[in-house]
Length: 216
Image (cartoon, rainbow, N blue to C red; front, side, top):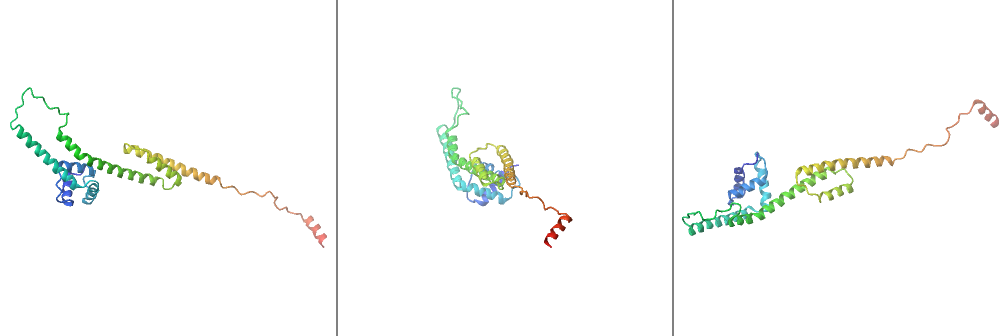
């Protein structure tokens, strides 16, 4: 199960006192943390620090305050313009598919935050995948390793499953490459050249006696 939002709110108040984030904002932060339910405080604090480095919670709180003021002013103006509205049958019904101006303001305000967080998450995922790939290539020829890493930088993986399949293929290719290099190395070792000379010939007793007679 995901980390309870109440726990995230508790850690935010502890680490960033005075930062008044809206409940909607806290819910969004809790979803981005992607931590299990039983996460320790240190793990939660570390993730909060990472998100705060990307887009400070203090700036988020300022945006939330502005949005709350806009919402309050909008409601106040609506009440002043029409304190007791009585819709008639001729009044057009609002189209729920069409966003109000206020919804557009909120979307525009949080768009930079969403973009930064998504970019941050993509960067961390990319670094993690590259580390896994380099581990699989640690024993191969440097040229082969550089070639694979270069191609990796050009590939876009939409899902983790796509990357896992790619990693398995690279692992198999690396094993085959290492084996091929080993085979080439063994093939370059030549067997020792056998001597073409005849082995020493054993002489007979008669031949030995004849040689001694000549010497003596």
